[in-house]
Length: 169
Image (cartoon, rainbow, N blue to C red; front, top):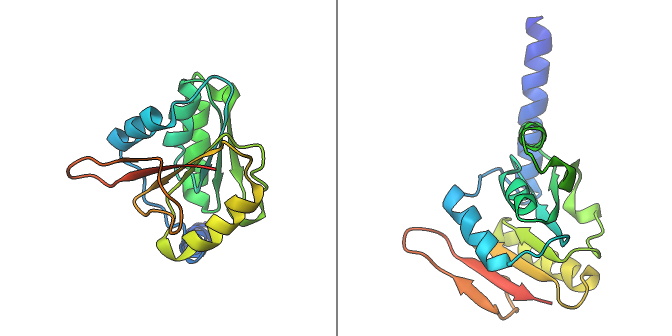
């Protein structure tokens, strides 16, 4: 039994390390910043929203609660499982999808809104991917680090909190 527990913990640790190397270590978005995201996104019922590296799913569930068809992508095992638990506890679970999926292999062409909080060293690669896949009018909201080369339509700044940058394709 002890060996099985050690193996499980080792696999969870490996998934955290892998996510970190992919530019998406798990650092949850603060609850107040989730509210700021919802205001900035101005989600309309039925819009498709992706959270790239959704962690525990708090933002995906919040987006679904205001009408989005929200999908979270996660590659770290523990946050992925927590996101599923959060989805199951949500009254809006029919509009929430949590996928154990790498953002680099996922086609995002049906997105209306993208939320991203990744490490700055992967943002230029992500920018190229988004420019290639997203349709005109798609909103991209970056948390903490801006997209180099893109002009933000709006920047939400609050004393003592990280900035949110709204871009429109």
